[in-house]
Length: 259
Ligand SMILES: Nc1ncnc2c1ncn2[C@@H]1O[C@H](COP(=O)(O)OP(=O)(O)OP(=O)(O)O)[C@@H](O)[C@H]1O
Ligand SMILES: [Mg+2]
Picture 1 (tube, rainbow, N blue to C red):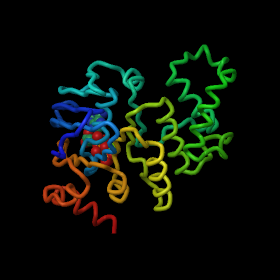
Picture 2: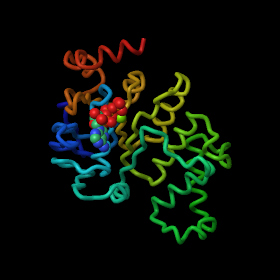
Picture 3: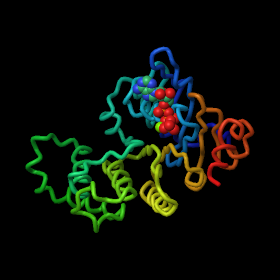
Picture 4: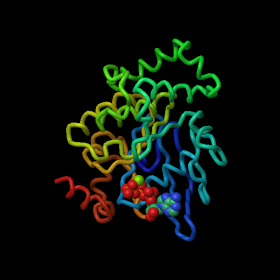
């Protein structure tokens, strides 16, 4: 198997993707195919363009050129919410919850949104028992059942990130994108979130930007290394770790920083 490509069906395909902000080209021709059910990590130095790549995939920014395909469908011109409803959901690098709403309401809100309710139907929400059940099932999955009725803003940082993962999963998307899910966490919080990610993304496609090499090597089936807007290597963890180009450009320094 050529590890730069995938066997079987691709969940996500990037084809000659480019993005410039003004005169500066930030994403400089990215080709990547991520298989259905694969856990794929994107690593690289600060400012390499990882979050920008996420923003191109999710439709937040239009690309300058190139294609993004989700389950074989071209996403050109689609708005983020349309892409979301096609089964792709993301979390942001910065925590993105409603702090004054309860934990339960945060999840219910994301479910409503995913199901396409309009605001005028909000008064009907409490009368939708399946919605309550679905929200409770998600709370169970992310281990926040006991925090159900607390304002989300009082949760610990790790719990807030867990909630965010729940919100990201709520619409039932098959392709989940997480931008630095363990950023700013202690070792024990990181272990907790990694176990959670492993559990909730079972059978789904995961694309994750992550700086913590322990997390990357523990979770990813394959890794892509993005340096100055270009993928310099894609492969299984052991292949990427042994790649001299990667060692030189990034991994040597990143692994040293772990110790
Ligand atoms: N909306 C924007 N307008 C102009 N420049 C931008 C914009 N978004 C990102 N950039 C620039 O693109 C480059 C890549 O940024 P990006 O946030 O994608 O990097 P990153 O790999 O996610 O970095 P980090 O590891 O620090 O999160 C940076 O130089 C950044 O300043
Ligand atoms: Mg980033």
